[in-house]
Length: 359
Image (cartoon, rainbow, N blue to C red; front, side, top):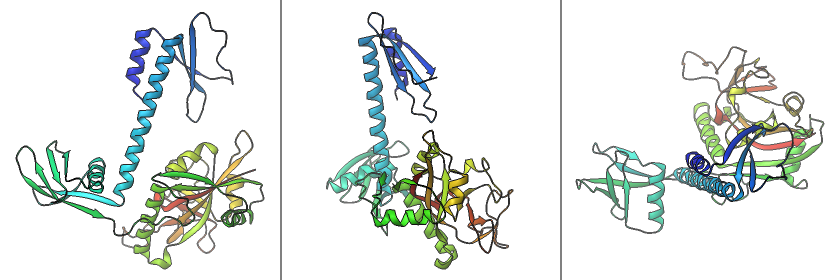
């Protein structure tokens, strides 16, 4: 948000801007004096307890609100553009040769610009190199010319060897990076997830939602390939496990990752990582606190457990398997023969596949 512009307009118009801590569900006082107007905007933070109050002439306050809304819209557009550029780079990458003949990948923005021009069958595109030099790229000849010195550089376009394979049950993303889909109770997918949960957890399911996050799935897929290459497919250890959480943590988990910074807040007997249970009942009863409405939440996650060993409370990472310090276990457990708890230390090792809301 253009905070400086908002503050400047508030100052010029003589509007008072005050941040208050909301104590109750009070609304805006309807008995305004004269032409004074008051606007409240609830903070979208976890607490939801802060309100911003603008006091001044109605026309002036509405003008500031319009400026705020415009700034928010611009920020959302920029965020969408950044996500589209990052998504494209997962499948297509443009590179340029430097003076030492070494290939350098272009930035996300420049990569997006060249690919857009390529798809539109344009011949020339001007862009600024990381060192500030202006370049003119000839897409047909795959060459870039320094507009100041006339020096020529090779340019190339590379596509990923394999496109990212999304789960077959996902709904089309339509260039979106995140989508949450509520499952129909009579669908086979819902029944499968519910059956696994209810085998040990005796609760009433209110809804099951599928989490479709392009970035998290891509990272998880890369991690799966890495562990499979290191251990071999037989020791990949991909399992469906459970992770209880609070309502406040859901946004972070499904849009970003399972957060290891919370390790130790509840229990860290087998290592300071992210914990997943084999039985849903364990997570549901211990680590799924109810919200104000009495609803609890739990994730059904895909977890790459790989090769594991018994952990202890002092461990901040998995130990080496032998003398090679780079060949470490992939997870920790509470019992080597029949583990009921797995602990991971790498964010990309788990994917939050479904969110179950229950009571």
